[in-house]
Image (cartoon, rainbow, N blue to C red; front, side, top):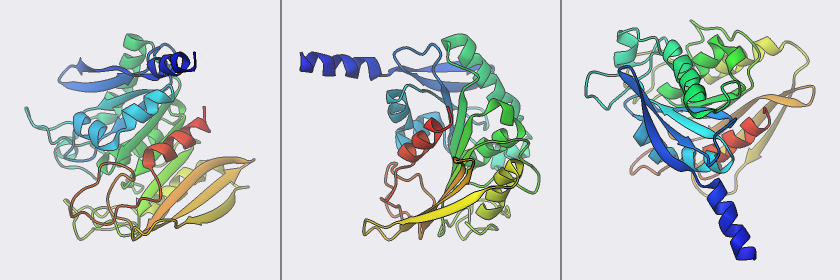
Length: 288
C-alpha cells in the first residue's frame, strides 16, 4: 500500500510534457503540473544570449517548481530571424532587443494573459524570475506593473534604476555575487561585460524595491558558510509587520551564475551554499 501511495504521489506531481506556444513571431515554453487549473504561474526569463530551452535545462527550475504545484513559463526574448541568441529590452540592456526598442513589457503581459486563457493557470498569482539580462527584465516588469506580480526574484542582473522606479509594493528576492565580472555588484562596467553599459548597483535595486514600503522596516542578517567552495553567503532580510518584503542574498566571492544550476567549466566561483530554485520557491511561498 505504501508503495502504491508513493507512486500515486509521484504521478500527481509529475509535470505534463513542456509545450511550445507561438505568439506572433515570438513564443514561450510552458511546464505544467498534472492539474494546471488555478495553478500559480512563474515566468522564468533566460539571460542575454540564451533561450528558453537553454535556461530551462541549465536551471532545472521547471522540474522543481512543478513539484510545488506551479506552472512555469519560459518566454523567448528576441533576436534576428533564426537566431537562438536572444535578449530582452530592459532599458539599458541588452543587444538586439534594446537596440530595436522591443516592447518586452507588453510581450510578457501578453504571455501571462495567454497562459491563463489557454491552460487555465491563475493569471492573478504571477511570479517573475530571471538570470542576468532576464533578471533585469523581471525586475523591470515588476517595477512597472506591481499590481500584476506577487513577488520577483532576480539573479545576477540589476534593473535600470536610473530609468525605472518601482510603482508599488512588490516583495523581492535578489541573489548576486560580489565578484560578478559581467554585472558588477557595486555597479558599473565589469571586466567581462559583453556591453559597455554602466549597470546599476545591487544596493540601488534594493533601495528601489524597499522605497514603496515606507518606514518601519527592520533589518537582520545571517551568514552561511558550510562548504569549502570559495564563497560564503550573507542573507539580509528586510521585514515589515513580521513579513519579509525583501531578501538580499549576497554571495561573497561569487561570480555570474545561477546557484545550484548546471556547473560551468572554467567559470568564476559557483557557490554550493545555496540553491537558487529552492530559495526563490521558498520566498514565493511566503507571498501566496
